[in-house]
Image (cartoon, rainbow, N blue to C red):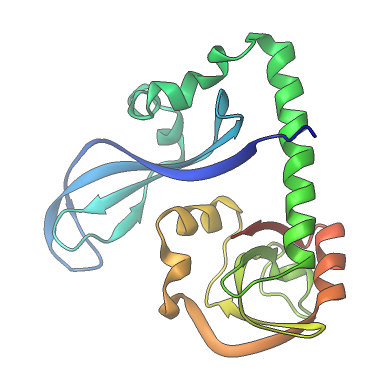
Length: 214
């Protein structure tokens, strides 16, 4: 039997000094550090490519994260901060544009199959990326990317807790996952929601639930 080894992981890279700035979290002037959150997707670990780059800055005094200029994620220094094997891992495979396209197609198909499998057999601790705007009767914004975490699995229902906030870009949720924020109890509201398993599967097929992290 032939198996495809695929997957992805979140990673952080230190880009360099961000200069002396005022931190709105601790209220002090501090030396900041430029950081970059990104995701490495792979097939057999030989074919790698970087996606979802999100720049931010860290306060050297309190460690609070602050947004950075959107253009920073493609700056030369940001690119160089990513390890070479993450940036150019696909060169260790067959190489070429044709191979890259084929690899991306295989990874996307495998990712979709894995998501369906994990939705069909949920486990406590699973985190779902969802667009809350599409399941809210009166959404606060046209797009509300957020996270739902499974807290209990009982028969045909799954009990989840919702994150307190949302983003207008899915990279916001990816950044929180990469930084470990979605594992913090304080990240979620106290209210829980019971969702039928069939409803979860339908949400995925309709693009409301976009990814599963286990």
